Length: 276
Image: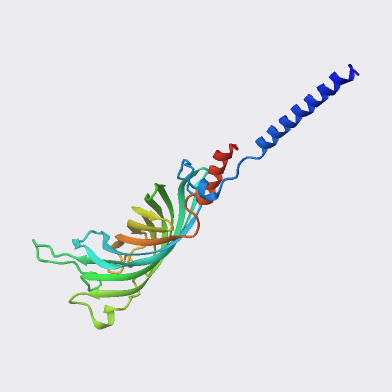
């Protein structure tokens, strides 16, 4: 009996210790539950991570057109407020981690043309097809690569690419312009338009809306008319060069930043519960 009593005492103490240890382990494996409201108050470092998102927008503005004449003519700026269009932009990461690039395509309406200026020394003014001023209405489709650098509510923009277009209407002004030629394309006029297009600007961002202010340059590789329209021996060229300033409103078709509310709550939960 004396030998059995110590053995029973040891077994009882061992069972009590194991029960206490099991309770501690159970308490450790069942952490406290925190509400979403509390998790929303946990401070998580917010890093601006730009997603591969899409946006569409409309633009409106005006600008100035001139011609790169050869031989050169004395000319003035031809101003207009007839620049507008719609575009779609797809941002993506170069090499999978550089979120600075995108591709933009659109459909735009603009003005090309020239306005001759009087030579004050001679009193003469150049005339092309009887006109001292001529404006072309143009529809063009640009495809450009776009660079963007984003901050919380601000971004810098730059783009460069090509475009193709069509000169669908014309208006000539001048003392030698007749009613038949004022709004009529001649056989020597070129209606197909193409060339380079690019620009730079900035954007103000309040997700999901963005307001862009841009200056665009369009340089045509298609001359306005046949080089030999006046003579088979003396050629003349006219390449449009346009500068347009526009304001655009864009709508994001997806999340711009990678850390939305759900992502921040997930990181807060990892901080609170100690999960890596």
